[in-house]
Amino acid sequence: MPRTPPDPSADTPPADAPRPRGRPRKTAEERDDGNRRQALLGAAALLFRQHGFAGTSTRDIAQAVGMRSGSPFYHFDSKQALLGAVMTEGMRSALQHQAQALAALPAGASARARFAALVRSHFDVLLGPQSDFIPVMLYEWRLLQPDQRAAVQALKDDYESVWQHVLDALHQAGCLRGDPRLVRLMIFGALNWSVQWYQPPGRGTSRQRATLDDLTRTALELFLTTP
Amino acid sequence: MPRTPPDPSADTPPADAPRPRGRPRKTAEERDDGNRRQALLGAAALLFRQHGFAGTSTRDIAQAVGMRSGSPFYHFDSKQALLGAVMTEGMRSALQHQAQALAALPAGASARARFAALVRSHFDVLLGPQSDFIPVMLYEWRLLQPDQRAAVQALKDDYESVWQHVLDALHQAGCLRGDPRLVRLMIFGALNWSVQWYQPPGRGTSRQRATLDDLTRTALELFLTTP
DNA sequence: CCTACCGATCGGTAGG
DNA sequence: CCTACCGATCGGTAGG
Image 1 (cartoon, rainbow over the protein chains, first blue to last red):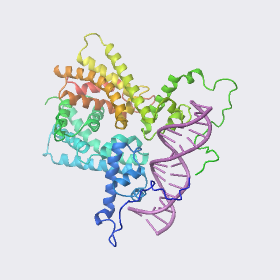
Image 2 (cartoon, each protein chain N blue to C red):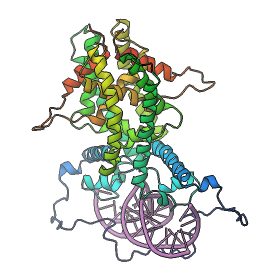
Image 3 (tube, each protein chain N blue to C red):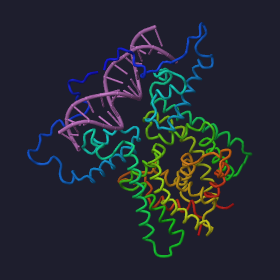
Image 4 (cartoon, chains in turn red, purple, brown, orange):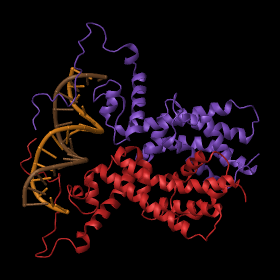
């Protein structure tokens, strides 16, 4: 099919947009490379989460940040690289949040207190604001290419080893029953699954929704024996 | 691009396949409509699970059962209808398995015993043989169209209400702590998450993998207080 | 259920 | 980062 009259639907040019004479078309902030890259990551995380990786086109992502269809490939080598970057960014942020939560505890805090901090931090990263990066990792992990998977797996290993130490301590203190490795996987499941059903308490909703504190308290009650 | 010479890559015809003279091209079993529909469902479940809904083409599914590219649409109105049918079939099978597991219990079985049967049945449906239907539901639930979602939701409600009754009984007996509704969601998460990491114990694997009995025992230890 | 096909969309690229 | 584009693939359909 020859396309001599340029197909207007292929790459819709801005209908309006009279060229601002002499001034740069983008503000300094918009031109900043790191900012544009971050904007692409955020849009990709949101759209990947909503429609899945394969269900989101690179054009969708470009449009969400006001770019034209080819421009995301100036920042990322491929759509797969964008997926890997979303997950890496998610884990980087989760690790940082985790470290801060533990650092805020008093020195010599109990295993129970450390566990509570980890659970609450996990819910924050999963369900708080700008919380699309980790859900994308949870939903689309199997679609990661092996080379990118290794990089993200290293970050996941770091994150999980912190949990494993706390869980081992709880197990030895008799606060937690069952094989600690399987228990870790099941606890992660219980927490991660919340991305499928949790909705933050909105204003004016008729039925009262659970808060992240509610979730954290329930998790502690469910998993730990009474002190 | 005019396609006067029929594009061989578009819809690859069987390279060999000399017509068997006089005999039907498909055996009776292959021609059976229900059988072909079931074959499509099974292939769709496997491929949707591996590559996601949007990452699987209807051509992939057709090829997996030996059909040509347009033929799935003789059995299903659309790709979306195929997704809905996979989930409906998964829930139908899960409900049947659940009912059988409870029926096999002695009359007057304790809440603990009923809980154990539900957990084991859940793992069977999730991780046993031909276990791609429910994982597709877990992974792709958000991609279901609203009308199809309602139908599957009704089956899910039935399935979950059986659990809720048992969990309420455990809670009243003091075997389970925490808000029963949130607890149900967290327990489902702990169990469902296993589709992300569980691998059945293979022959000759160096490290011993967990069995479904191991998972069930760990779940009981983790969630229930000591009797 | 196959044949033959359509219109739309997709990831990605060369050149600026 | 935009322009203009390519080759491939996709869901779906008419007619048999």
